[in-house]
Length: 342
Image (tube, rainbow, N blue to C red):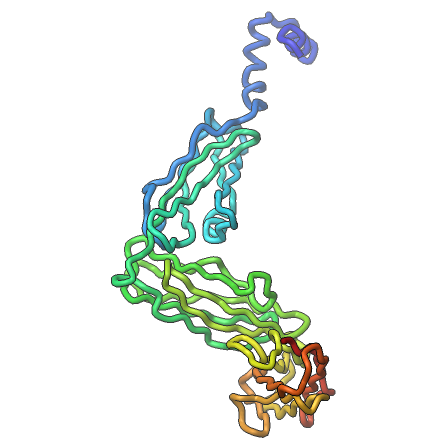
């Protein structure tokens, strides 16, 4: 639609005849608000930080944001998504109406090598601006993650596990972010934030993990990391029903995370504890509770128990084995099946 056609439309709509110059003036704000807003630049201050520290990112538009503001898409340029940056920004920032810029705090994942560069982009429509932040490892002689613990190793779906991280020294001004990661990443045992901030002057912080194992016992290793300092804790989620599950490969000569499983008592009330018998349909495979009394009694304050599996060398790889957990004076037995691996 050209200028004269636009002016004509204004005259028709108002029922009066306006000069072309006046009609153009009336339409100018409408054209400005409908025009595509573009990003002029984005910056980070300070542009160089130590792992765990906070920085401020600023996004500037080429023109003021129209009514309703402008949502800016934020992304990092890493090969694998920076989950710490995602949690800090949720990949969005809004420039308020009438403003040209917005500033917001960010965190990025800690670095293990000096001068690690994280590229950051800000985009609106087809326009994109790029900046970067350089991250240095933290000096382990001064600061470190000294421990990471969980209050419950086994918990029922829908409940929470509390994790606690501890530092060697008090956190600086602005606090210090400790990255939290799940191994394997796709495990449905628990979910939790991508980082926890130890407040300035403090040496520890807690965070909640939501238990999400809805169908069977599931396991995840949770890592708390600050540069090269890494601490690990295991968490097992169990469904609300009575269940049994094998939580990793079963081999003749297992490693640290193999040949174990869990029995989950679910949300079944067991004020006097629960006695569980484990049996195998293969005489060369035995399942046993290593951290419980010999009779397999699970205390009333526990949601389940972990068990170990031993495989005799005579059992060929590829053999399918069924394990059964029988709750004495409890609900019907539950079973799980696994295959012996090389």
